[in-house]
Image (cartoon, rainbow over all chains, first blue to last red; front, side):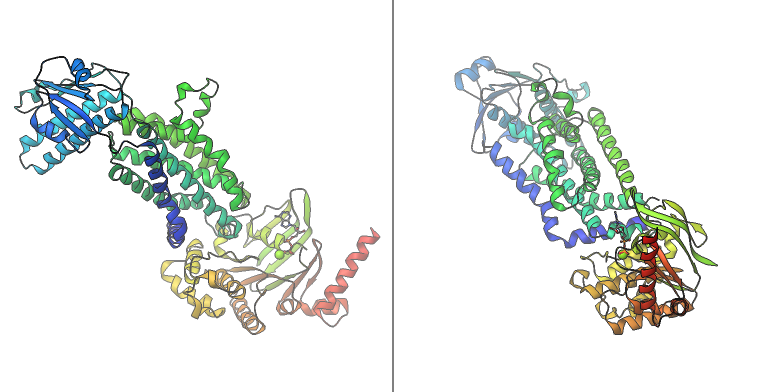
Length: 389
Length: 245
Ligand SMILES: Nc1ncnc2c1ncn2[C@@H]1O[C@H](COP(=O)(O)OP(=O)(O)O)[C@@H](O)[C@H]1O
Ligand SMILES: [Mg+2]
C-alpha cells in the first residue's frame, strides 16, 4: 500500500515534469543519432558480391540498394575472382554448403555484406511467417538459422569453421545451408559504430537514470519532504523501493524506446535476443538508480550532484570497451572491473554483435545485480541519518 | 494517563548540547505549548519526541512506548516547522499521499480530507497545485496533513506562522474541540497569544526549561499580569543564576 502510493506519486511528479521527461526519453536518442552520423558514414557506399550456384531465393533476399550481386560463371577460385574483379566478397554454394569469402580491405564493405546477409535472414523469417505451409516454414526457418550461423561464424572471427546443417534438414528438398567464411585480408572486424553502439546505449541509460533519480531524491531531501516522510510509519526500505520501482518504470520505457530506435532507425541487427538487451539495460538502470540515490545523499544541491558526474560517470565510459581492455596498460585493466558500465557494455556487445545467449552473459548480469544490491544496502544505511529507526 | 513523558532529557547534535535536563509530561486531552525564542531548542525537542532524533541521555515515552518507535508514528499527526509539500501535486494529492503513508484506509480518505481541509478553509483550493499556493496556504495545508489520520497525538511545530488572525482564531477553536475529544496536542510557538490559549505552558530558553505550568499559575507564580511578562521575568532569573555560577 505504502510502496504503491510512493510509486504513484513518483510517476505523477515525473509525468508532470515535461522537461525531465524529455531529457530522459529524447536526449538519449539525440546522442545516439549524433554518434551514428559521426561514426557510420558509409550510407552511400555500395559493395559488389559475386555469387556462384547460390539459390535464387537467397540471392533475391540478399540484394539491396547498397549491394550489387554479380553471377559468376567461371570456375576460378574465389580469391582470384575477388582480385580480378575487385568484388567485396564472393558467396558460393555447393550442395547445402555456403562459402563466403570477403576481400575485407575495406571493413565497411565487409560490414555491408554482413548486414545484407543479416537482413536476408530477417526477410526469410518474415516470408516464413507469411507462408501458411508449415513445411515450407520449417525449411525457410532452417535457411534463416543457417544464415544466422554465418553471422556467428563471422562475428567470432573464425576462419573455415563450417556449420553443418543437421541431417534431417539436408533431407528436405530446399536448402539448409552450411557456411565457410574466408577472409582475404585481416579478420572479421565490425565498423566502429557497431562496436560503440552497445556501449553508447548502456552509457546513455546509465547516465540519464543516474542523474534524474539522484536529483529527484536530492529534491526530496532539500525540500524537507524526505524528513516529513520519515515522520510517518513508512520503512526506509519502502521509500527506496518506491523510488526504485517508480523510476524503474521510466528506465524500462526509456530502454525500450532506445532499443526500438536503434533497431528501426539505425537498422541495427541484434543477433542475440532483444529481451537480453532490454534485461541488461534494466539491470544497468537499476545500478544507476541505486547509485544515483546513494550519491545524492552526499550532495547538498543540484549543482553538487552534477559535480559528481565527472567522478562517477565519465570514467566508466573509458573502461567500458571503447578502448579495448587488452590495449590498456596492465595496471589500468583492473579498474574496469569496478565499473558497472563495463559489465553492462560487455554483455550487451556480446548479445548484439555475437548473438550471445543467457549462459554467455549470466556472469556479467550477476555482477550487475551485485552492484545494485551493494548500493541499495548503502542507501538503507545512509538513510539512517534522517531517522534512526 | 500520560501521553508524553520526557525524563531528564539531554539532547544535541554531535558534541554540541542543545537541550539540558528537560522534564515534561503531557496528559491525554491536554494542550501544551512550548514557548521560547528561536534557537532555544523547541524544534530539537519536538523532533526528539517524534523519535527523529535519539536522546543523548534520558528517556522519551509516547503513549506508553519508548521512542524512537517507527510504528507509533501512525498515531502521531505531525506538522514540521518548514512546509514539506510536493509542489507538482495538488493539495488533494498531497493529502491523499500523506494519508496513505499514515495508513488511513481508502474508504476513510475522502471523509478525512474533507474534515481536515474544512478546519483550515482550504476546500475551494483543493485541486490547485501546491506550487501556486501562498506561504499561508502551504502552512494551512501542512496543518491539514497533520490532521488527516485523526491521530491521538498532534505535534505541531510553529503552526500559526503566516496565518492571519481570523483563521488563527478558527484553528484554535478546532484545536480546543479536538482536545475535548480526548486528543493530546503539543505545539511550539514564539507568539504569546498562542501560548495563552494552551492548558499548559513550558518556557524554553537556551535549551533549558525555565518555567512550567498553566497560564494562570505562571502569572501568579511570577507576580505579573501576563504570560509575556512571566516569560521575561523567568528569563532574567535564568541569566542571574548563570552569572552566579
Ligand atoms: N541539524 C542541526 N545540526 C546542528 N545544530 C542544529 C541542528 N538543528 C538545530 N541546531 C541548533 O540547535 C539549536 C536549537 O535549534 P532549534 O531546535 O531549531 O530551535 P528552535 O526550534 O527553538 O528555533 C540552535 O542553536 C541550532 O543552531
Ligand atoms: Mg524551531
